[in-house]
Image (cartoon, rainbow over the protein chains, first blue to last red):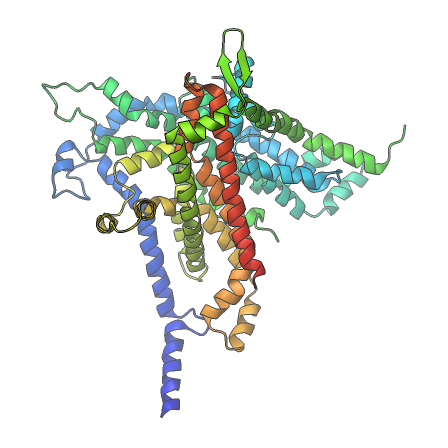
Length: 312
Length: 285
């Protein structure tokens, strides 16, 4: 009797969980959990999108919680004007794409140097590369600021480009590590063959290794771009208002809004700064990144496997 | 003149990494030492340049004993990091384990979970927090409950409130860690699990005895990554204080430099603590 019972339990277990724990019910449970977590992840975005289309009546109407009563676009019109959107977007692209490109190229060169050549003291140097990731920019920013000030580079894009070119941009250590791992995974035979044919080291690098590392470039550029884009502390300090980036504009959003649309005590319909306008501004702020992510998400989510950062 | 092959290799290698060495000396090594030096000085910016007067430990003294704001902020930063890092890493591990199950459409979930990494910047998070978009409506009620329990000591209650109210932001900071775990999990040998299952190990046992030890290096990496991310994120109040002190004529850059070094040291202590604990667990086996 007991044995029959246990067999029945085993059978039920197998149907539910599968032999390796991958049965249909188990999978359904996992999908349910993943969807639940996914909803929580996207909740702020849903909130942002729905609120940004609400007019001031929707905001106070307790019946309107998720779906606005109409597509009210005035919030976006205002937010666009407050942030001076088109102009700011162009400046943001300038101060993110250029440093990201420079940083990617320098990281490729440095990563190749570490991956391929026997240099005395290399382990120590490479440990220092990784250490630069841990050193917070806040501790080097005061002397760097003074240095750039003496050189007259505050407010110039070169205060971003020069450190990036020398492998000391935002999180440069990480990008050097990406290229280091990538170049180490390429077999040496091809380069040796080219060397036997008489090509010098620089020629081998430029003609054989550079074209092979395309995935590493894309991944480095994308991450670098995103991190330069989202940086505000150093952007405010080094660019000193000469370049206005979208996140910096969002930081001053409330003040800028009140300056552009002063509150008139006699006439207050829809003029005042409400959460809908805040959300419209935030949405406009992340929209370019969302678009970039939509087209390149594969590179982002496969970055860690492709570069083998976790080690073999 | 003939130079050996070995020497030529070294020189070529130096040509490649030379730009890094120069950059490191100018933009990392020198500023690090300069900040340390400035922290023992009073710095005045005059028309001719900067004037420094040696004041010994005064700036540090001021930071610890005369500036109540900084003391509070750095203790809060320490406590919050201590709590939030394990939470983020454990959460990232759970999600990675779920994503490791073979399912149709798991690529979509991966894309959704990683999305915040791309769009997260200080001002965006600040706006979302200000407008209450980072708290699920249900969680707000739980916070009300925890307010009722006033028997709890202050710091602990604060930390719990902090965890619950920043629930969504915790998830938003775990994207990279999740991918690191996922990459690690996908490299695990299936045969090992089959052997364990034949020997009668349950899934639960297999997780603790096989999976966890195998991904321990990734736990360490993720701990370090999370501490660094939490510390350099522009919403970190300590960074705000360092920045305001920098432009504040009352304290000046010397004081700001001292704050920066204290903050760096606290961060190193946190890193050492997390690495030590993860290693300890590893060797205790």
